[in-house]
Length: 406
Image (cartoon, rainbow, N blue to C red; front, side, top):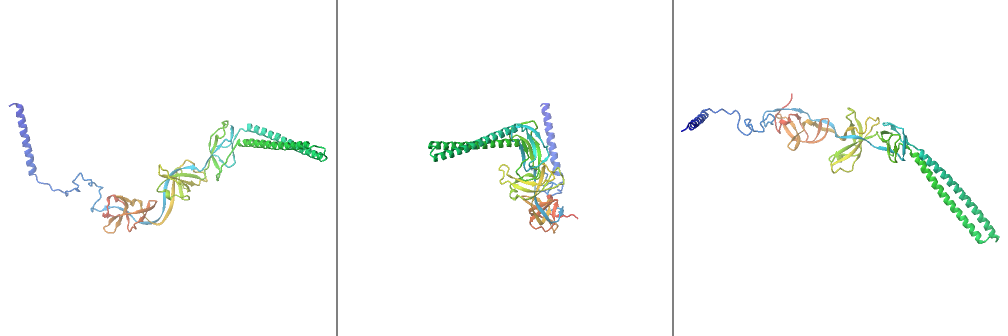
């Protein structure tokens, strides 16, 4: 037998002796008492998901909690929205005639009133056209006077021929010729009168063109002064008819455009009061009211638009500013109220833990809430008859014993 096989036999025997000794030691060792009961809920089970300091006690030691009394308060039913300010109307003052912009008389940010002159287009070409139209009117008026004189002459000739015919001196042919000449003269008067009217219309058009070289502030909506928002053309620019020159904005009132969800949409109505705040003016509140509500919801977003009109007499607010709008839908007088911190969710139910006198222990009560304001929430149902837990609810279940604060 080789040395290799001898070594393997000795090593195997040593392993067998060692295993036998360990088995004898394990059977002879006294059993240790288990300090905790065995079972799926035992803390000795490291795989138990409830084995944590935050697990809820089930009839175990009382839990220290903080409580608050149920109060009676006046709560406003409000909702808050985010939006931005817009001018209620934006007017673009545009050139009505083509020409060179001669001058701009107002600056950006300047208030302007209805009828105030804003800018002028070079009127020289239009003045010359007006003078030419005036001359044509004078010529047409002279032609009309000449035609009227011709009618008078034809009438006198007709009277003369008739008197001669009565004396049997003039023939019927002469009478017929006189009648024809009178008719022609009267037609000439009608033509001259129409030509005069045509020239007068051309003169009025030329005068209007001259007037349209002056851009004045015009708007149809009621309201106070507008403010120059932008200068869209500079003096010397060659303009076409319709090219913008200035924009005018209405700053009082301003409007905030809101997006309302479908659940809120039925509650919106014109005249609903609003309080508006702007982050750039902390601590200031501006009064407003809902002015318009869109008659439809956007199919893509499921939201509807509403506009809140805000008074801005001092011009503090500006278009484009971000604002928060609080709409007040109503007030609840003498409402049953608890701190908002008392509300918890258990399963699919929203409720709170009310402290019972026995124990003391807590009872979980599903609730129906109403208005919320200032950290308080109205409880519509049920009627509460004890303080409610506002701290430590995550350790509680229905019937848990609690330790109340001193």
